[in-house]
Amino acid sequence: MSKGKKLTLDDFRKKALQREKAKKLFTFIDVDGFGEIRFERPTDNEILRYMNECARAVKVDEKGNVTEQDLSITFEASKELVYVCCPFLQDRELREELDIKDPLDVVSKIFGINGTIEIASQIVEEFEGGKLTEQVVEDVKN
Image 1 (cartoon, rainbow, N blue to C red):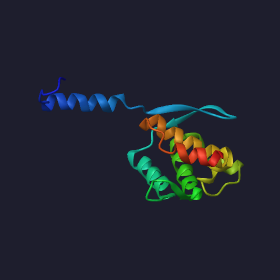
Image 2: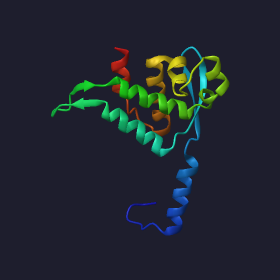
Image 3: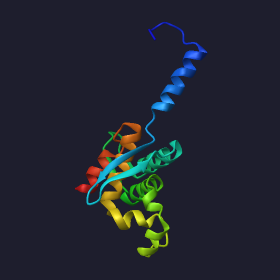
Image 4: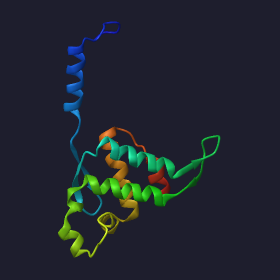
């Protein structure tokens, strides 16, 4: 469509359906020590909840410099996102073999703190095209 041409309802419908069909439904992420693991597309609400929690975990001054960061908030949000996106982690038998009561704990038990935060960041990047938590991951590594 050229600039200035008004979009018709039919054109709008076609574009909306095209965009929806083009969305990635799953991705494979290469996880250190495991290989490529399949992760399902999170819902918009799951992505927003993760992003909100990551934003809540960081305090900035008037110049935009990070003054404080609560990685426990980021970690909990990451555990939840990774868990809901990976059907392997939802396996009851695996939880029983690892003697895990809280299903979300399977994520950290298997991937650790840094791995969990990195995977969550990659999930968002894969499905939303942006590195929303790049700085958080970098801070955790350091």
